[in-house]
Amino acid sequence: MDPILIVDDEEKIRSLVRLYLEREGFTVEEAEDGRVALEKFRAGQFSLLIIDLMMPDIDGWRVCREVRESSSLPIIMLTARGEEFDRVLGLELGADDYLVKPFSTKELVARVKALLRRSRGQLQSVSSEITAGLLCIDKERHRVSIGDEVINLTPLEFDLLYFLAKNRGRVFSREQLMETVWGYDFYGDARTVDTHVKKLREKLNHPSVKGMLVTVWGVGYKFDSDQVHSK
Image 1 (cartoon, rainbow, N blue to C red):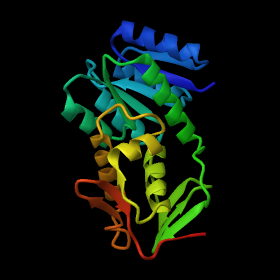
Image 2: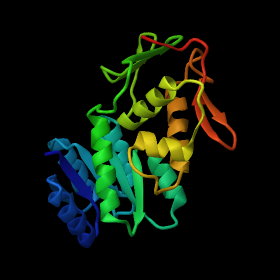
Image 3: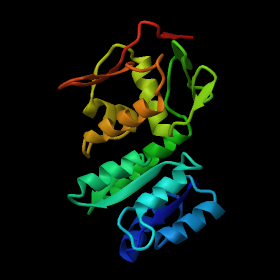
Image 4: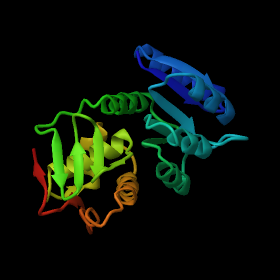
C-alpha cells in the first residue's frame, strides 16, 4: 500500500492521523520536525506527505520548498485556524491541498485517496492529448510541453490544466473545479483554486500560451484558445 509520511511536532496529531490511515491499509511513517522529515524523504520512497506548517527549527514551508525541488509528490499541509496567509504561501510553495486544524479525519482520508488517485493518473478522459499552439498536454505520458521545453507540473496542476483545456471555452466556478478536479466534495476555501491557477500561469509563461487561462470575473475560470484541438 502507498507509504505516507506524517510531519508534525504534535505527537497526538501524528498518532491520530496514523491510526486512521493505517485502518485504511496505508503504510505510515512519522517525523516530529522538519529536519527529520527531510532526512526520511531523501532516504525513503513515499507516495504522499502530510506536513504541518508551524514547526520549530525547520518549518513546513521549507520542507515543502525543498521537496518540490526534486519531487512532485502530493503534499497536504496542516495549518492552524485563521492563518490564511500561511495557507496561501504553502500552496504557492507547491503544496497540493490543505486542512485547517482541528480537522475531520474522515475528510483527511478522503483527500489522501483523491490525491493518490491523481498521482497515478487515474482520472478518466476521452482523448489523451490536447494541443494549443505550441502547448501540448499529453495525458497518457502525463507530460506538458511548450515546443521542445517540458514544463514541470505537480499532478494536481496537470489535472487542473488538462480538465480546463479538455472543456475549452466552458466556464467553471471555483467550487465546481474543487469538486471535479480535486476529487472530493468541496469543504475548504475556494481561493485554493486561485492559487493553483496563478502557479499554472507562472509556469506556462510563454507568448504562445499567455492568456489561455482566462479569469471570468465573478464566475470562475476557463481555457480559451481558437487553436485548441484534441488528437
